[in-house]
Length: 94
Image 1 (cartoon, rainbow, N blue to C red):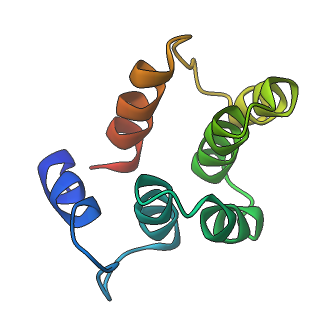
Image 2 (image 1 turned 60 degrees about the horizontal axis):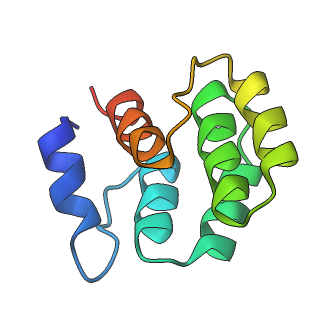
Image 3 (image 1 turned 30 degrees about the vertical axis):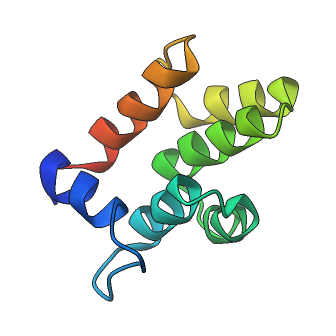
């Protein structure tokens, strides 16, 4: 899915049927359903899931845990939260 397609999918009222687990987690994050997003990425064991997981902890104010997951992801994550979201969307798209 391209960045444009992902952005459009995130703006729908419901998550699309064809979304991957990561994309669904991003949809729930975008719609402030952090617990549901957290449940999804917690079941995955890959770098992108760890990246999303870290972002969720940052949103919750748990920066220590967020930093742990960011390190575990191996991605070079920007410091600014607005930049983090855009960075994650870029990594999640083709």
